[in-house]
Image (cartoon, rainbow, N blue to C red; front, side, top):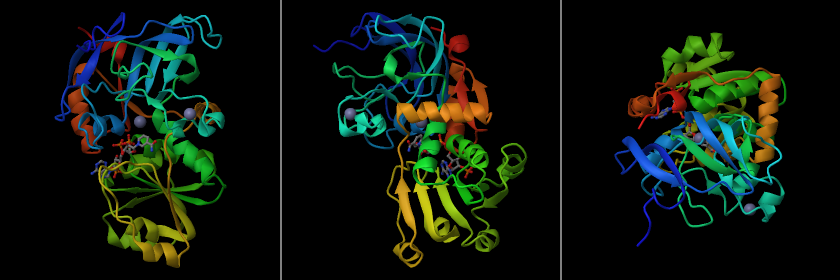
Length: 348
Ligand SMILES: NC(=O)c1ccc[n+]([C@@H]2O[C@H](COP(=O)([O-])OP(=O)(O)OC[C@H]3O[C@@H](n4cnc5c(N)ncnc54)[C@H](OP(=O)(O)O)[C@@H]3O)[C@@H](O)[C@H]2O)c1
Ligand SMILES: [Zn+2]
Ligand SMILES: [Zn+2]
């Protein structure tokens, strides 16, 4: 018979997991592998709550297998380091993002694009190479190959930084639209300003306007349901980064782009979006996508953020608030990232 999650490995661990598609999170005992030569063991202090966690606990993408213990914005402190680990030592503050392993030998891995490795292992809801499941950061500790460990980070940062670089959204003076002002969107606004762009937020929440401008530094704010304002902005943007977590029409966004404009989507709605062809063809526009970023580029992003003093705006929550936080996240009611105070609030 297969071993239970609690018995698979020698290191006892504890966290909160969803047991079924209701997505309700509750206490869960499981285990982590023994720290190997290439591994570090991390005592988890904090974990960010990404909208991907919400998609996953409710099986909105159709590939969740339960129990799902989410969390891929992990911040903690190293408590053990294997004999091959020179980069980190016990006591270091570190972060773990979306990826905990990859094959290290394919074309993508060789180009520091582990995020596109066909054998990439996700931090949770995925399978280790030994056939056991991965569990994320809504828990007390994690054991990770040091090559996937970084200074503290949030997945939100690299997910918008990587496409901005790749698709050339960094030329000062150009006009960037940021669709959806949540965890990813608010970092995109800050990065856009640091690159010297004009930044307009495109949002379904009029109440986020004053903060978007005064606190995050956006130049303008467009409420997507206001037809007059949207009409006035048609044809003014060079590129849009679309972080919207739900199904939405693309036609209004394509309309906001200038000729040759680019609409790059990183949001992952659970159903396909309809792609209007006429505005694409007639304006020689481009629609693209992007998935997180490689470890090397993530380090570059962290250095860029440190240089430009870019941090994420957070609401610190207790572990037992997580189900309420998920309900609020589903309603776009977060300023702008929930972060779980794991070490101070996770109790058995
Ligand atoms: N490609 C990748 O590598 C990658 C990485 C991380 C996350 N993601 C995906 O990116 C998306 C955004 O993640 P996030 O953590 O930034 O989410 P989030 O904090 O919930 O932000 C998403 C924003 O989308 C807008 N939105 C409009 N209608 C919505 C609706 N019906 N439901 C939810 N949001 C709606 C809201 O902004 P307004 O209030 O301004 O309208 C909301 O704040 C998710 O789909 C997530 O899975 C992708
Ligand atoms: Zn994420
Ligand atoms: Zn690979």
